[in-house]
Image 1 (cartoon, rainbow, N blue to C red):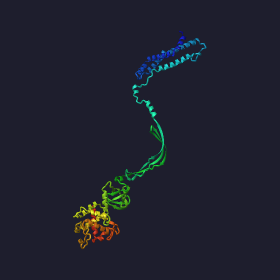
Image 2 (image 1 turned 180 degrees about the horizontal axis):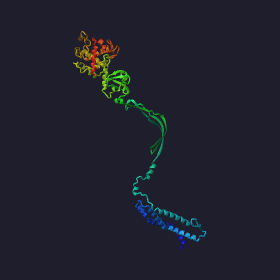
Image 3 (image 1 turned 60 degrees about the vertical axis):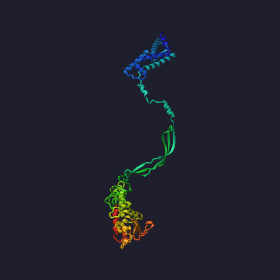
Image 4 (image 1 turned 90 degrees about the vertical axis):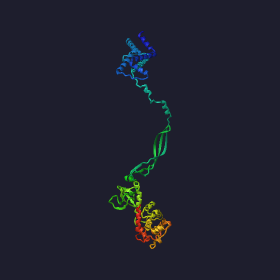
Length: 498
């Protein structure tokens, strides 16, 4: 067979035969590559193995594959034959006008068949693909084990994503409404309050505004709210709170204006220093009203008189509860003097009367101890000092031991005259009856000015009135000029028993 016939034979080969030869060539190339075997074995076992090899081994493998491909490929052989044919034809027909030589040395014909051009293009594509396949046979796949792939817990569930997004419904709603605006609170230190105590001096007021709001809902659930406009309707009013800083007030648990008590006799001063002018002496246990704090001094009011007193001389009922009772007794005792008014109650309680009229050695028959309650009741009914009334009875009856007291239940010698005291004196059925009558006589004729409203709608006659004091009563009640001194001395003794 001539060379021309062989070329025509090759061109007449079908595409199916060409692809079959290409597969066989690739298979032989892989068989000859030792590293490809390892790769194929790993792939067959359903996991990848990273093949470690040096750069020299990779280069050798690549060269081996390309060289093998060039030797075994039928298209390479066809190309060689075609090149030889072109050289032969060119040399024999160099002068033939049907052939031309390109600058690169190639022979180009003027009338090339369509089949020849198609075959040439196909060969080029096949050779390029075969070359890529050969050079990439040493590619090492990423090492991802089957176990790692199966353990992936973050795999996307496409069906779930689709269902979720299909069911999501977003809506927006625009509305106008009124809202409250919170007020601001300011705290101020106040030295006239106990430390730590808070007092609201100006209550806060909540403001109001009109707002336009856009709300976004996702499946009827609010996910976003935006205020796009607002209009002030009423400004909020600030709240002011005073916070106490006074350790003195906190110590005694008192406030300005409260009552405090003296722990010792003290002098009321004109100003807050010891060298200032004295105003009055206040006895121990008496109370004052706290007005101001001034360092170690306190401004106080005592019976309407204001001045300064040392803070160390004061205490409170919270710290010393017994001061309340001591103060009450001290107030009673502070009113006891020869010129005290007798046309008002003594201020003693029933227990006080029982206390001062009990346990007296002179009261041998316990007349006054047993009738203490009647002296208290008489004071309440007729507005007369019950201690004075008891002192008169003690003086006139010698503590209930006189004949008139024992025989006639008359503790006061009422109605008796000097020439016949026993015979002229009144007789009572009980001591209570005599106490009640004598109290009315004093109120109506001796201790109240004329016209003064007294008991049972009556008014005072003031027939023997010379002032509401013991000495004033002495003028018309007793012939003894020292009567008032003796009676007042008994009064003092009784008061001291408090």
